[in-house]
Structure formats: C-alpha cells, structure tokens
Length: 190
Image (cartoon, rainbow, N blue to C red):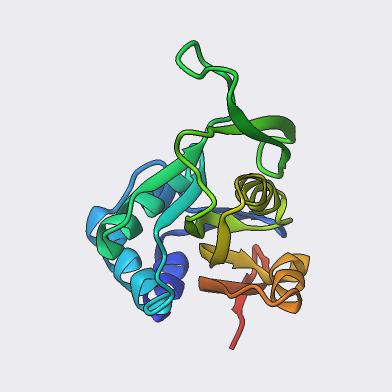
C-alpha cells in the first residue's frame, strides 16, 4: 500500500534499527480517515477468502482489526493479555512474548467466541518476530478454526518472520513491508 509507505515516511520516526514509532497515526493517535483506507485495502486483499472472523491481540491491533471487520462485515475478536473477573475458566490460551514490551503474556480468548467453523483472518499493527501471530494461530488451532491469512499494517521483513509464515503456505499481507531502517532512512520491499 503506497499510502502506508508515504505515511510512514512523513509521520513515522525511526528510533533504532528495529523500532519504528507510528504513534502519531496508527497506534496511539489514530488517523481515522487513513484507518478506513487501510481497512478497505485489507478487505480487498482477502476478498473471496470467506473470512468469518477477525482475530487480533490487545491493544494496538484492535483499531485496525475493528476497521477491517467493518469493511469486511465480520465480527472481531481480540485476545486479552490479562485475565479479568468477567473471563471464566473456559478459554483458549497461548504464551506470547511481546517484542515491544519485552514481556511474556498468557493471551486468551473465551471458548464462547472462537469455534471450529470460523474462518479466521489475523490482523495486527506490526509483524516483527511473529510471536503475537504465532500465539493467535495457536488459539485458532485450539478452537479448530481455519486460518485464512494474516494482515498487518507494517512488516519488518529483516526479521524473516513474515517470509517463514509464507513458506508454510500462509497468505501474509503487509500494507508496508520494511526491508531495513535506520536513522538515515527506510528501505521498503519492492
């Protein structure tokens, strides 16, 4: 998505060779008009896949997933990172290491919301090491749901995680795919 690359160049900030700050438009201060354009692109990329549910992880993936869900006309389910009093013991769970926070989380979704007849699209803001997506895939597998693909706003190609998923036959679509980045600039995948 050329628009995402342009937005990153205009408003993103490279903090290090592996950290890109996009809080000004994507995951803290959300540009809702741009979010709608992202959602339409995701819907287009997975047109014909008969997705029945979008699955994401809290918190930064929720806005993108919700917008994509509206564009695709499907519900959105997000995995919680912390058990709350309104989540009973009947959950699917997986351990996920957060690249951004450097912490491990036991993410979970209620068995009431994820089923074997679901055709699931995973949506998140970033694909870096792939840990969050592997955790979401595990939740889907536990439910017996069918994985239809992965959509992310930004893929850090230099980690190799996206290509590893593709090698497994998983459709992975990134609205911007970064080959390398430094304070000197960003190189996008052609």
